[in-house]
Length: 323
Image (cartoon, rainbow, N blue to C red; front, side, top):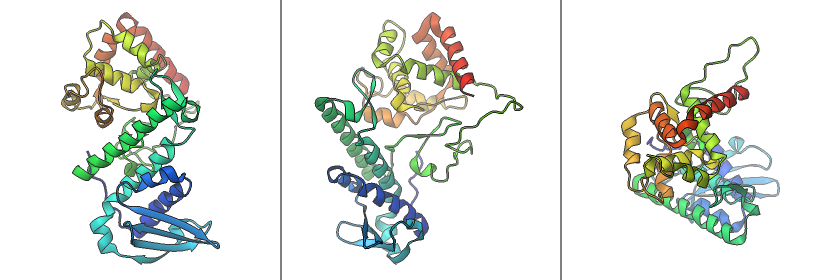
């Protein structure tokens, strides 16, 4: 797991802290304070056409910038910056706080798509009160678990899920800032369109296997569970297929030719993954791990049986239709 980069560059801080401050301004008070969970407090104020951005501890700021309302915070004047204290106490908290603010703004939004116990997707604003409270508790629990892990190990597991459109790798929030995937060097968010004069790239087995998992997601979580009944699949293998098939976890456990089988085997044997009720926190950690093509193929062959070849053809056709 890569180390969280420290952030002490004033220009980058003006950008990231300005975004955090803007997010907090648009959050209801009841959820806004979750953005402070790591101990970095960011405040953005506007009055009389002037703006002020402050960041630091509970009662004292160590970064203070001023500017005009409507002007990008990257163009604001930095009036005060205690760089030494910042590097000692806050530099390592900037990216996690930014990720946390993004997650809070999305997770508690009424338009957020959530996975219901049935495996179906619904907007948070459309679920009943009991389901909303349960989902709300799950989100808060995830925040607390990720923050506690970070405070103990300095490893940020990530709350928001970002994926490269080309290689499918899950990316940490700081790996998305330049919009260039650090693994395949492609533009993360650009979708390439093939022209008539340009030959279409070959479709790899890895792409097809990933697409097959997406197709399984259309069946719903419990349909996948029923398919797995009586098959020679371990609990961990079933859980990984279900996790990959869930549209809310798109891109998890990416299938690649170069994946390290020993790494994924560690998770397959993990007691909280190889369990009837896998731990969501552990699954979230494991989801970063790529799966070798041959291993994913073997798992899907066991799950689908004689329907595997037909599913493979349909998945390939779906990919070709998208290009």
